Amino acid sequence: MKKTLAALLLVSLGAVLAGCGKKEEPAPQAAAPAPAAVAKVVIGLDDNFPPMGFRDEKNEIVGFDIDMAREAARRMGAEVEFKPIDWSAKEAELSGKRVDALWNGLTITEERKQNIAFTAPYMENHQIIVVPADAAIKAKADLAGKVVGAQEGSSAVDAVKKDEAVFKSFKEFKTFGDNITALMDLSAGRLNAVVVDEVVGRYLVSKKPGEYAVLDENFGTEEYGVGVRKDDTEMLAKLNKALDGMKQDGTAGQISTKWFGKNIVK
Image (tube, rainbow, N blue to C red):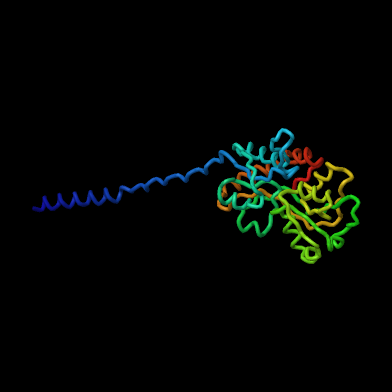
């Protein structure tokens, strides 16, 4: 009986010691999935916005922002597609996932930040006032009682309305589908002035020397950025990295010089 009891005690003790000595290994944790590669970027743009994005004589989309986007996509290892959209409905196009990014002289504003995530600014711009070369208009105060135009959905509209005193002095404020149409109305005498992005306005004015003048005063300074959906953090990070690299190695400056004659990249 004693032997049997002793044997049972030894067996029990061995089992306890074996249990204490054996440590359970934690189940291996599944590795976090790698961020999905950006295979293609669909860029939404206004294809009548020279020199940022427009169609050349071969009907091909070209421009400063086009060259910038192509280079950024190349550095991201992604294919790029340019999709002309109704610029006044750009936020709906982006949120509806019909485009992945808005890249066409898009001004960074607090209001737009509510619905759009922006890259770091890549250019600084002014809202300039273009008038006929022989106009008596020399300053913003001279716009009182005049008919002024701007592109619908552009930041020029917001900039003009922000200067409430001047805006209220206009006889009429008209908006157009694009800046070229607005300038045509200016040439035809249906407008007294056009407010437009500086990079665009000066490019268009240079095409018709002696026809227009640009006032010294403007409706403020703004910054351009690339807009993406707020939840598309992977796209935003990759675009910022590509743009930063382009600035650092001088590629962005070369593209700027090609279109503007100097490096105006921020």
